[in-house]
Length: 249
Image (cartoon, rainbow, N blue to C red; front, side):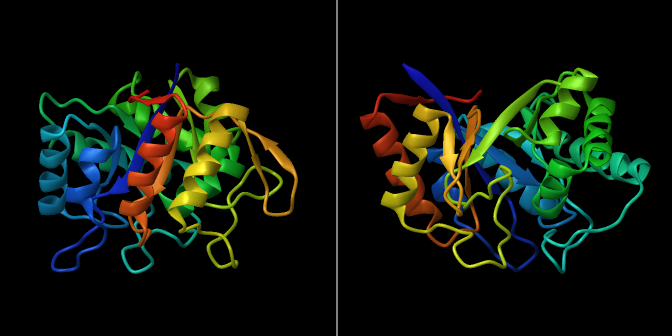
């Protein structure tokens, strides 16, 4: 039987501002990427989200981003590699402090940092080195086929290849920018069938029609997608129906 991890970006509320549907999503996924306070989240939100994840047996990952609360971490920031390593170490260590036994399952960079590192090898290396300073055996989730995966392999950091059920792809394997029409998919049935195809064929059709090969260790649904809860419910049903088991990788 095929097995895939189902992850979601969560813990992205801040103060009195609430985003996502974390309490309902967490029982339905196998791993959670929890914001660490730089692009979203705060100590109270981090503690609460970690506690709910642990209660539901969900694996916990740090979701570090650029220091950009106003832009939700979706704006590229030009930073020296050393500074990137430092903000990664800071955020990963902060979330780790909220977990029982100081045990994190993985790290997944957020937003613009994730996308930029997919194409910028030096940036990807800086992220990997920042993680290694906390725990050299802590896996990184990176876009399948991207420089994040290549950099992790280069420095000996465990890596998991991630695919996105609710995002459109470009021909080079990167994600279509959110500013473009059709970048985010919201129809649960469409997303679920697309996910089955991605897992079975280890490939995805780009928005321009090309077939893009990809490895799928983990499948992501964005927690801030308005249809996230419906998508995850449909995903679980459709994956199970097609003989695909959900389990953290």
